Image 1 (tube, one colour):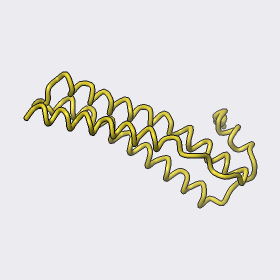
Image 2 (cartoon, one colour):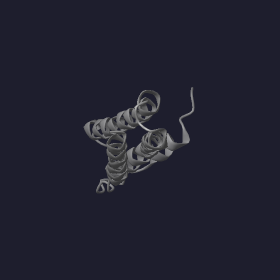
Image 3 (cartoon, one colour):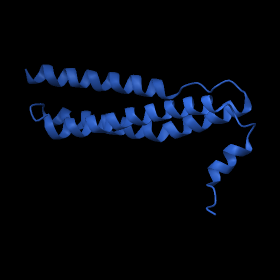
Length: 122
């Protein structure tokens, strides 16, 4: 029999088995964050590969920002899922969403940079 991962053993040792609907909802939220992170990485690669009309002094930082945001979001999504799952199992309030400000401020910065690039190019 395959041994369960350490994090799975730690997770299932907490609290009681929750209603599966809550676990599935938490998983859907995790997958939404993963899809968003994948979209950010793809957007960064797309900006670098296809936005040839933008100056390289701005295109490269914009592409890098999008890829880094995607990576941070992807890495943080599991931690958020795990913390939420523990809270559900313990019947505690869900933890605050620390990912939303990262994405909001990061995308705002990226949008401002993209606007500057477009205005400078014209």
